[in-house]
Image (tube, rainbow, N blue to C red; front, side, top):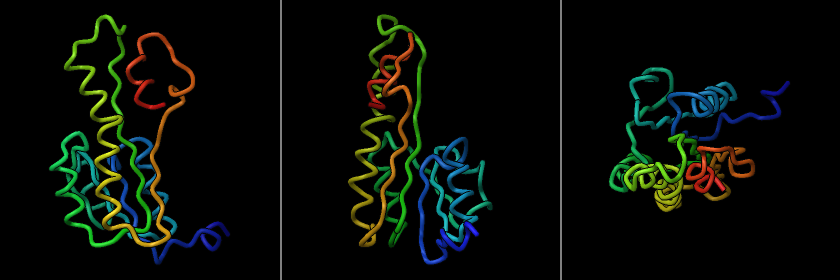
Length: 149
């Protein structure tokens, strides 16, 4: 019944961060509903052979994102899921650690959006996965929460 309601057999989807967790589950669901699924991840070998196309991408690296989208001619669905969290008090963060969290969780999503626009089909959807930490902050999660808000 659900497959008839959500037939994606004419859609091409890209899941960034699709080698594990929410990203992998999303890619599997899109495939189950018939979409042509491309997965891009910092660890592509983890899902090689499971989806229609699999590529390496580091969304914190602009050139890596450009290279990914150069390989894709069109998209109907984009789901971006990457996120990193270094759990420690803000005063214990190094500038390098803060920049790493910021670059993956915020700047990287800008890189993805900027490049996705050039291949997105009319009426396509861009979905960015965020976190409950955008609304409920726990000790040791300040920078992560800032980037997910």
